[in-house]
Length: 377
Ligand SMILES: *Cc1c(COP(=O)(O)O)cnc(C)c1O
Image (cartoon, rainbow, N blue to C red; front, top):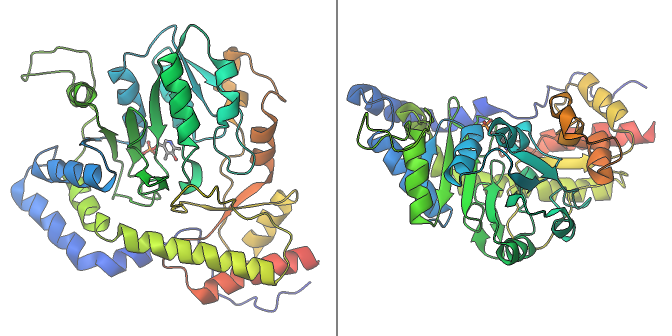
């Protein structure tokens, strides 16, 4: 079948150029400010970003760190989680969630997802608790928060810590509370493709617990206080001032960009329904603000659909093709194919399509037209 719009321009999965053009002058002024100061690591820009992200997320403290991965690592270190400890988490996530645990000698204990939201299913958590369980690590996947009320209730009942992996969920809400503010610690990523992305790696740990905030701050800088006197064995998990300056400019636009993503998600829902395209669209759990880090569609013909989109120069991506319990590097955990049915099915059937804020209605119509043609064929 020949496409009616073969010469149509490509639609990328994410267009960071478009965002950059809209804030170029402000970003350059902020970068100049840092370069003039010659303060490149931590310092006033990082402190200001920490206050701003904490306030934005409804938290008392924010501690800027070197990446989302390091946010998870240092949060676990602050809780003293290590060898022999178990942490309950989801197998359907980015690698860092489970990887950070294993790096500390702890064991990830996976619990399957709710197949509608792709987030950890709270109803399955209690059965996974053992005397070694120390924490629960829910992930707010794709920009919609996990079902936090039952998770917090279970944690309280069993005296467990809760670490929110909020890398995909800055500004998302659950019953009026923001991602990163409900658990004991929240972990954010400023990887360029996240909703708030820097010009390199960066991350943030948030908390409402003064003691945990102090421990994270210490661990971020080799556990030293004062300099060269080490209370704890930490690491270099510091955030650069250049990243903080860029992120501060962008934070002021984040709500507008989120509104753009939400509008694009709503338009996809309308267009896909109007064209009667047999694709599952994201399930709205109805507990608050979804920030659409990704717009995930689902079909049993996922790989063929992805190839058709690629042929028409439309960006798409599989998040994620192999659940954590089946990763080679976690082989000695002893999990098998079939252990987490819903995660395994999601890994085979889901696909992210472009939803970034600068996506135009014409581009969305083009994406939907290619989807329609695929299912018509
Ligand atoms: C991006 C991401 C991370 C890691 O963040 P980095 O900044 O890339 O280290 C962790 N967890 C989830 C769910 C993510 O999406």
